[in-house]
Length: 492
Image (cartoon, rainbow, N blue to C red; front, top):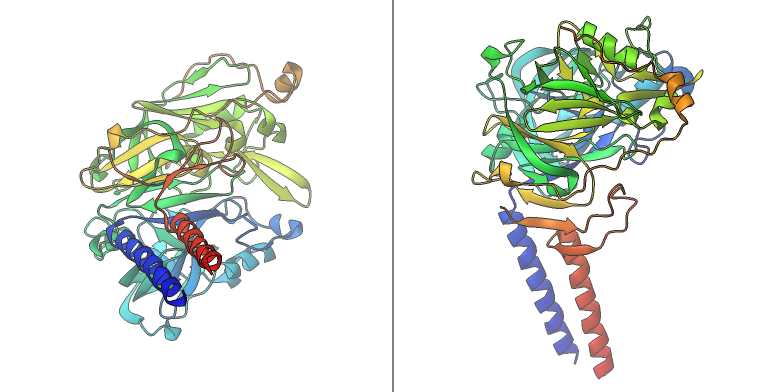
């Protein structure tokens, strides 16, 4: 009987390992969690109210999204800010440069890479200064192996920067814009994923998740149809020579911008057909000053404060209503609760509109992107866009043969927030909204049954419909092993 039991166990384990090996070989996408900086499950309580008030609101430590990389041999865990608006990866910000103890503690919490402690690191002779909308970094280039946290994928000999000095940076940055022979002369992270066979195409999908969820997901080489509703609409990326700043970015054409207040009567803003670019590295959405002022007035803000931001009532978070960004074939409806930026300070909760005036640059930052599901497709020079809704998990690979326009989301449209106030309360924070003159088929890997419309993936009760993920397979095979033990004992 003992011999029979051992034979059964060897057979089960052998078949399971063979199935796992097949999945690792055939899967050409990799998923990374995207974590909000305020997620206490990942980042400890690095802030105190007094320290927060000393930090300019333009800084990014309060609203930013991070992914974990494992760099070097042995691996060193480092969190980097996910940034579709830049092109290079670098690590090791200078935490001593920051103002406010909260920012210093957060900076230290994201991890530090030491090339001297890695047997696979090679220092290169070149250096560079990277400048951002906020802050800058002087970097020295190195090459090293990079593992993707929570996966068995590893990139060999990736070139990236190690900061020697930074100004006003809270963490390193993973730039996932265009790379080799477009903006830089070496393969960036997206290029390496394709070149080393981790992905089949230079495409990735991004779901930042809502403020309440505090985390989302980026899938390099794949997408998740249970993170959006309706079809994916394909928007051509505007060529650099035709873009506002002549730089290769994820520029697309926005066709209009409207506001649907609690009354339900939609207001159209004039002259809102314009080029915008999608920037996950920007906290705020930047719009032309005249347009931003009109929107702010409709949210009850008379003017910007001394820092250039629009103070608004925090009660807006509880009201139904959306700010609507329209593109060719799709409109992204951003709830008031996502448009309003809420900060905890020693003076209590302070709220600001998640839009800032700018006549130099127009971009859609995190305050808009949290409500969108976007596939950034460098291979086909397009952005595929849909309304974000989280109703489970159904991941599919993006291949050269994938017809993106044929892919539809599994989720129902988001449920409108119920009015939490009387009409008199609404009028106390919202001015009268009258129309004003304008101003300038693939195979799913894992799938869970979506919860009822309006329920979050974490709050709804989900049942497994079909799955071939390692976690589910492990549970199934473990059950089979336990059954074999039970049968053997019963026979004895």
